[in-house]
Length: 76
Length: 449
Image (tube, rainbow over all chains, first blue to last red; front, side, top):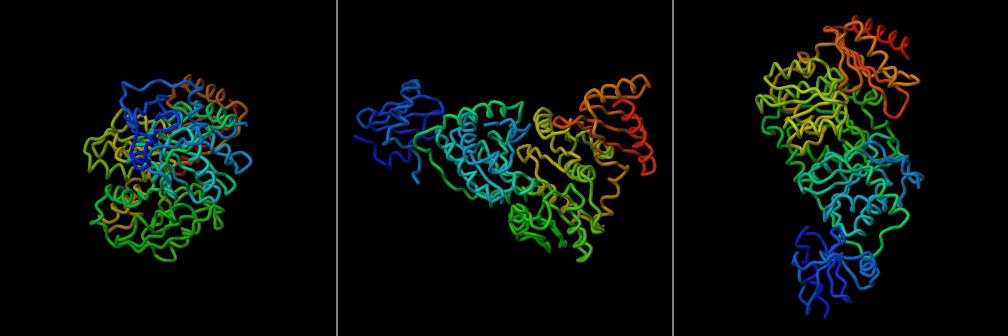
């Protein structure tokens, strides 16, 4: 189940406190500045630095190309 | 794309749209967003018409690499530096300062208004700009929001003076259709001044005169109006309102050195024993005043990145450049013309003397201003002149170009980095001696060019 937009407006990266790219089809929240991804498990975003993982260029491209992807933080 | 034409030593500047267009701005936004190592950046622009689409394109470029953009909208360059310091975020200002209407440009700083230049990131940003120009960042855009920080900025400017001590003064401000027309009404509101603004309409085509007060032609309107209205003081702003030049009640301009010395005195009263910086083009009156006021003077090279660096190393409270840039430690070490103007107004408020009388003790020598001479090989000429002077037993130093100190007069010779030019500054005890010494140096230059 996708995260709701109210929650997405509030979520930020636990390390640099910036916006995250949410990719619902892959259940990840991606930080493009630090190039790390956080998993969304059972609709719970696991925003723990210890559980983040590095992201390959191919994965990053798949996140950016996903039509459903959006950034967290206040939407326009 | 040829970025070498638009990436300068301290900023990006070019003609719109043939050198600097929206595609370049988008690429530069992605480049800066990647380089700046921050989840957000703050941006602003001056009144140039092209700034609207260029700053939006830059914002989109940064957002495409996952960086939130906070947009101040219209602002002066010193306002943007304040926002970068206040929010502790990297900043981007769209302005070409006093350059003609066809130009626009981008000034960048890191969080805390830290300067970005060729030695501090601009080369990397240029390489990234080229990459993103060829392969733009794609995908969703990070959040964008507008933010009004004018109240906070005005309070910050006022914090440098005691606004309750101001007395009613008649001020004429020539904002030359630049950003001074935006900021002057904000900072003067509610104060006991009678302010008349010349050319307040924001218009990047500069229909009245160029917004470059360093050129005496461009302060003629201000001088005339000061005399016509019997104003106490005149202020001339440049295009992005980060520089302000002061003219007294007789319409005589105060040099950057005189203003530096006056502000140094005020700052040292407030911060006894503090360090004050002055660049090596400044009059000898500046270190003399600093010493008389119990401060520690420190001579620096020309250029804002050097001043800011030495300010960080020494904890200096204030620094002045003869060219009209004034830096304050408590302004995130950035320069501000409007803070300087306020300090001069405070000094005037504390005295019954006219500004020309107040300034007199700080005007001690005659200076030539910057004299540009074309030579084939500037660096080699400086080297040959230096060798001759050393063999003559003259005291020379190489802090920036060549400075020769003869005791009762001195000169500095700096090669231009970009043109086959030598920049000469001479100071002597009076006009007659100055004229003689300028001729002497010219003969030297002819001999060794």
